[in-house]
Structures are given as structure tokens and as C-alpha cells.
Image (cartoon, rainbow, N blue to C red):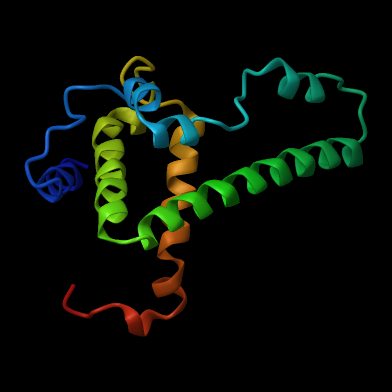
Length: 152
């Protein structure tokens, strides 16, 4: 992990834009942070109430789970479309967005801890959305490995 952290710091080209901040500050103080923050929190009463009745059948639980997943996928598709539009709009949009992702990964370095400090790292919904968007951005070259430069 330390090696990845050093690599990310080097990639940020000395930019200290969010290094002094926390994950929650990144969520509150940036537009992309606010967009990425939306999700299905596990402690939301609307979500937990759907699974409290132990007498529910397996098909009812499956239906509720599929409905939540469908809603989350629609939202994540929208976030991906926004980020992709910003990145493909040109250099003026691409650099700040990629810098934001670099900063988001740097300030959330402690999120992999057994009990992450909620005052320092972003909420799980933000981290999940960041992961989904970054993985979807990798699809073009993951589906066609010949596009990956062997010396990279």
C-alpha cells in the first residue's frame, strides 16, 4: 500500500490540492465529490426497513435487492456518463477530473483499514462510485488487451 501511495503522490506532480483535507471535505467542497456521494447507505431507514421482516419469502428479498441494485446501477451509469463527458471534452476538462480522482485516492488512503476513521475517509457510497467509474473507464483497454502498451 505504501508503494501505491508513493506512486499516486508522484503522479499528482507535487499538487497538494487535497492532501491537507479529508475524504468528507472532498465530498463537501467539490462538485464531483457531491455527485459521487449519492448512493444507498446501509444505515438508511428506508433501506434497512425492507429487510427487517424475517417472515419475508426469499423471492421478496430477492426482488427488493434487485430493485435497489437497479436504482444504484442507473445512478452509477449517469455518474459515469458525466465523468466520461468531462474527460472526452478535451484537455481543459480531462486534467482537473483526473487530478480529482488522484486526490480522492490519496485522501482516502486509510479507507482500507479494518476500522477506517470516518472523519478522514469518504463514505462507502463515494468510494464505491469512484471504483465503479474508474473500472468503467478501463473497459476499452481491458476488453482489448492489444491496446495496452507492453512497456507501460
